[in-house]
Image 1 (tube, rainbow, N blue to C red):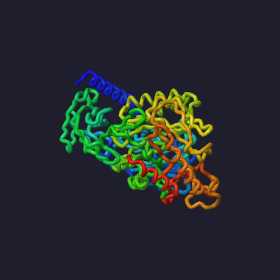
Image 2 (cartoon, rainbow, N blue to C red):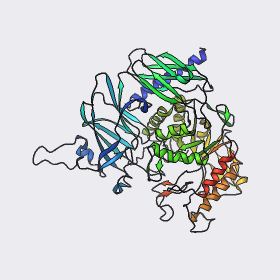
Image 3 (cartoon, rainbow, N blue to C red):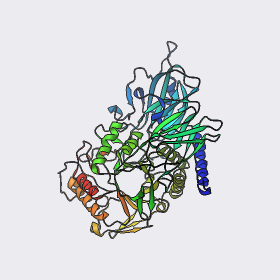
Image 4 (cartoon, rainbow, N blue to C red):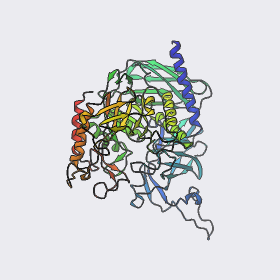
Length: 599
């Protein structure tokens, strides 16, 4: 091994060790690839107590006290309370709390048999937004963040027989939260993704990174992290289809460096090839379906597997339109992803937060590249000292879960933030540096919408653009901003000469609207939206370095701030499809455009 490569592997090993040391302080970082673990699923009916006034803490609901004397009584009870489905949001399950932003207490009883040589964890796919978790009357931990997984070890707290798990869920918006007080989607609260009891050996495979080295199409450079070791231990990696059997040895902290080569059939939208990869230690084994591909910038182009790629993308929110509820299942994901495929997409932008693993894994199998994004949205309070720490943790949780998904080609670290916001530049530049240290095999961007537009000329600038791989911008010419000239004559000035991705554009229409003039926005007509798309596509032909476009949005979705009583009714109507699955005129414009792009 040459010295340069040896130094790089050592650097990666150091960063991984540092990452585990940092995240261990939170005692919440979830093991990867839960599907391959020994799990007991805790989904299903959970008993709930609705607590809009927030008195449950004072009454110590989690202790479930029972009357002992004739004069005793308690003003709460899980017995006799309603039930809700987990996973699922609480807003869509009870009409009385449709717009609740507050506290709901969940309870689940389960039986368990303890084993002396095993460890146990409670794993949550996601809870929105703050979760406090109690087991058998004892508080075992908290987690903030509505879209990433977390876990708690309960080996010393779980008991043989019946156990009671109580989760306090609070989706109240926080000024120093991520996102903050204002955002343009429905604030679904609840235990919104799978809950699992996981049993492992004393020493288990906690995490791993098995992906191609940057700039290489046949060299894997990564690592495996064991948990619970006190000395070096052998780790084996097998890819049966390629007859690869690789062995490495961990250090005393459980970190094993990985380097091997193979003749890989590379993952791409045209050929979403996945290999069965087996990672095995002395007492543990996990299997993953992993694809291998390269993604990088060369001049003004993006290369996928060393070939130029044009991103034909669409924005998606994590909502089942037919149910007007939070999407969480494979069935929910298929509804949305099948529409994206039908549109002609080779990418989906999962806005504006990490979507479920079902969404990401199905996209990968279907040949859809994934743009994954942090919920760092608009009015984030960057000057609050807690906010950079929260961003850092959420980024690590996002990367940790999906770092082995070949479909994920881009990390987006913020959307529509503003350079004049105190400490915004410093906080996001530092976040970008940390992201590059944790994962240099994917592209990184920040999405900006504060470009100037004057005399039919875009002046695209922002300090953050100097620190990213691609310039991503949201522009709504024809809707929020009137055209100042012919679309084909639009001019562009960029802060630097990087690839350009138009990450949002479009306008609103109500499916079937014929209530007013077709050339006026106030008509909310499909024809007005159609004209926006026709003009935008005409403009695309004049955008320098254009490597992708992404209309906002695939489907009309719920947003409480959209209050027009006739045309919106609590929905953002920028969808290419209505919430009832009806395709608008703009759908066909976009589909035809994507058909003209060959890659």
